[in-house]
Amino acid sequence: MIDTKKCLVVAFLLAVVLYLPTQAQEVKMTKRKITEVVTAKLPEDFRPMTDQELASKYFTYKKPTAMFTDNYLKVDFGVNENDTEFEYKDLALVKGFYKSSLLRMFTRVQMIKEDMITINKKQYARFEFISEVEPEKYDVKQLPTLRTYSYILYTIENDKAIIINFSCPASLQKKWQPVAHEIMESVKL
Image (cartoon, rainbow, N blue to C red; front, side):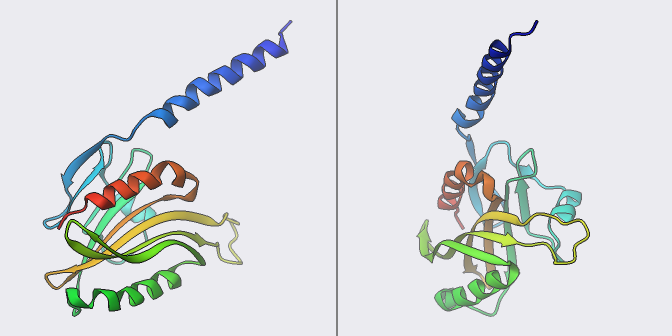
């Protein structure tokens, strides 16, 4: 006959042993050249997304300049460069346009930080937030609300708007938020 108490104790200990390594491990970072103008520290296991992965995860008409992901395709880091008529001195003004655009993209946005920040002698508009996207009211699949943690930097360099973003499911925010900060604080143009 199986001893239920012993089985529960063994199951609990196994769960603790399996859980601890994922929580105790530090994310190892390495400096990388992301684009011709952007370098940053990224987790060592981040790799460029394939075109197929990019198409299945992001619905965009223009391919990002660079997009990296973890081995589970849950945590992403990307850079986009777009031509702009604005100049670097206009960045504080342009920040309002970026915010308006973000708010239209999602059902709800809970801002964590929204400000201007200087990183490696370069000024950026910063948005750190939790977004929610609710499925369409008449969606046959009845998908759950999608919640995402995002950290985005915007700047202007040589007639280009540079958008640097980090995102992961909101359920992983506690683990990845410090990593996102480390990545963004290492960005250099």
